[in-house]
Length: 338
Image (cartoon, rainbow, N blue to C red; front, side, top):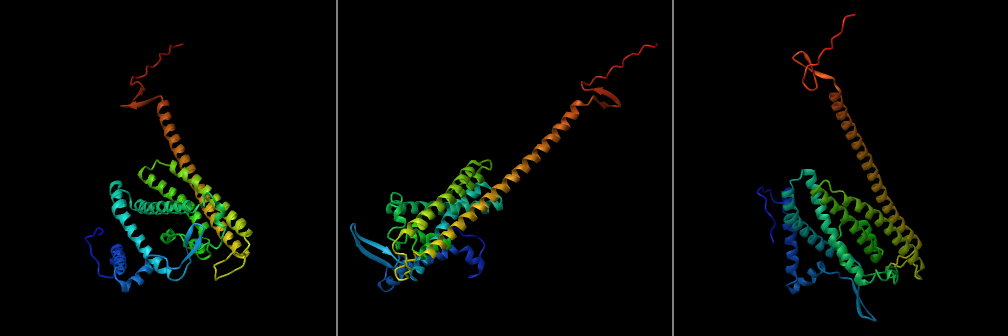
């Protein structure tokens, strides 16, 4: 795999060199880890970067079930899949977005926003599909009570390793064993963000396209409402009825009143802040549109007035003589002497 080369070269290990060749460097590190799997002496170390290590196998009515806990070895796994994400980022940029940019001929500022929306659109699409797959296979849709039953939840979905945004909320769900609730909230958030970036991509292609933004605005508010409702249902109602409400670090049980209130406060604050920013932007945008419309009306009225004044004029001068609008000289009326 080789990415496109630039003609200009930079000194080794300089900042410009690392920026220009970061995808190739990361790709080399991934190949180095994969080669380590081929040898028995290095396979035990290389496997730390590929799969989670803190797995716990238990027997159930459906057979053997593998659950996962967390620990410091997960840092190696997260680092490896972060490198995979960087490589995919470079592939999308190199073979999709750059080709589209050369056809659209966007300005520098629009080009930056187009690349950002294109990358995030792919990220949210993949994450949404993966989250939906886990939600459907685990039965969270048909059985919402599974979001809080049998807490703490030690299974850690793999797609969380690909997420670099919203690190605080993901880390909280990860450490507090609220992975089921966190997964559903991430799925809702990914759908909302994907709708926004899709709308922006369509806008860059056709600047008269605003219907996608209107549909996203409705979906954004609905996502905030569903998120708050789900959090109060799962954390405020479901976990509050659980029998085990004692703090136990060994088993990963954080179901206490203070932690539940803290989680609800953080989520409510975040959703309220997002809604506040959204409505403030919409109001400012509405004021700007009204000012633009008023300015257009004033300009149109001024032009109309100028055209009216020209039409209503009695005539115009040509070679020092008064001419009528039809180009003929007005006749003077004869006045009889008394």
